[in-house]
Length: 312
Figure 1 (tube, rainbow, N blue to C red):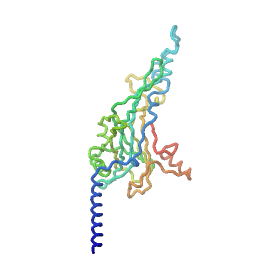
Figure 2 (cartoon, rainbow, N blue to C red):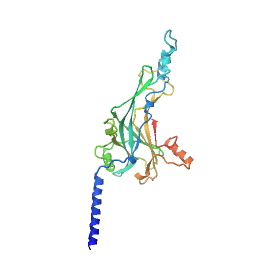
Figure 3 (cartoon, rainbow, N blue to C red):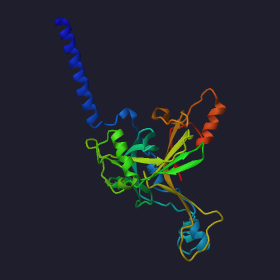
């Protein structure tokens, strides 16, 4: 009898211990694990601060500077010669970006795809300047930055694209599911209002956010998320057919912003969406090159990659 009472006491202690531990795990905010966060930063930021010397086509096409030989100055100082070798300089900054795999939450019978992420200002701002010897010098500086994001979910196989939707009531449910404390998970509107200070080795000032999409085709298996706003880098292209003289000074170049393309794929069916069936990257078929090439064509990639920087 004494042995039975002892066993019952041990069992009761274990049950109470499990109940207390379970309650603590549910109520204590969970720190997002480093093992499930993918972190990316733009390492080519210096290259975006200036263009290689090229022809200033707008000036030549509109102003039509004439070729002539100065009496005292070198020919390289004429407008025509200078317009043929111009390097455009600009300040460029970038934010560090970390994210979790795409997930799905059901709210009121609707499947909402969501993308939890953080942005961190690590002081990646570059300022080019011309020295006395007319060489280009790039200096680093640190200042507050804003993240004004655009998230586009591209379902390649069904040829559909979805813009991020602002739904505060959904964000609160995602915050509860992900165990994010109240006020720390922003949508694309609220995060754009925050001035993000520079983080240091001892002070982490990352800001968490989430992008959401409703009505995504459940047949979508090959997916990319395009993120704009992580950098102010851009690339511009001259108009087809050349520049035309105008009196309204409208921009004629095609300006493409630098964006991050993050790839995902899923292996489930269209009936029951499951978080566990969405993977980071693209499907790999090392033993079937023809099938692998088809996947690359779907994602518009040259090589298998989990992410890449593109201009859109």
